[in-house]
Image (cartoon, rainbow, N blue to C red; front, side):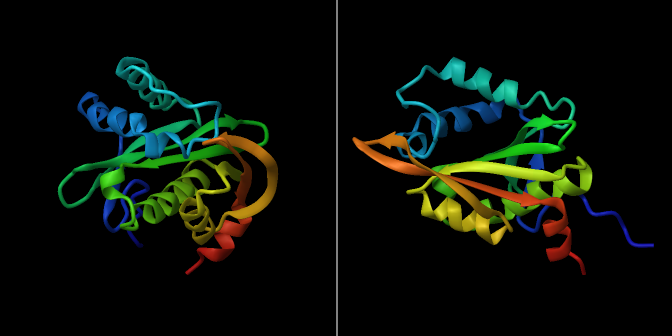
Length: 186
């Protein structure tokens, strides 16, 4: 008999519950203009730290099939970011994926590993059928990461995101359970 796979551990990262001391980094990154500009929802503007911290606490209540987790390095336990599956629809078994990797840790493959790990968790542990996301069309690095994890572009909301005086597409992507299982069989 083989040992069960740890749903929360990858080769370089581990996903764990939110801790109060994680909020310092997470809030700082969320307030970073280079991070804020990649969010597709509404206009972005500076927000005080406490409402952002409460937002993270809410995302991390981890009830039902909603899951919000802190991303940490396995080697040092350093906070790298945050990942979530939220808005799970029990009837249709669908959830939305969201991730933030702190600017000091971007470009090192942590987003790739976290995305793959969280998608596996969604299908193999939570029993989801579909995981979806929306990303600003100018965020090519994120689109590439999601495609490498198996997400496919399902459509574009043309000129749906207004940033820096210009309109950008919002890209809708998704992955289905059977697609993930087919690509991840030994």
